[in-house]
Image (cartoon, rainbow, N blue to C red; front, side, top):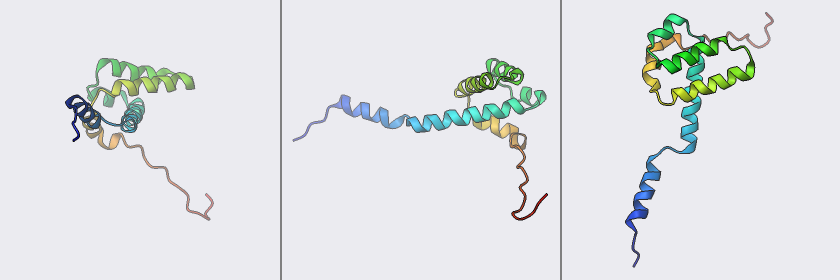
Length: 112
């Protein structure tokens, strides 16, 4: 006869409910990518989103950074700030503004 320890069962349930490390990393990368879109927005569009003050300040600061490494760190920081924010309403509010235009590609065999 096999007995089960209720403490062990409850611990396994908690592990099953939280997202996997891969899922957390995907969410972090998505937040950082969305943060990069925020950097490219016009100031008027950025203000309309109603972002928290620390995030808004970080986005504004990123616009002035020209050093490649510094900008990369600032983008990571923006992604970190965005992990606590629900991205769905922001993406909906931005709508087509957030989607960059697709670059035109030349057809094979044609020279431009």
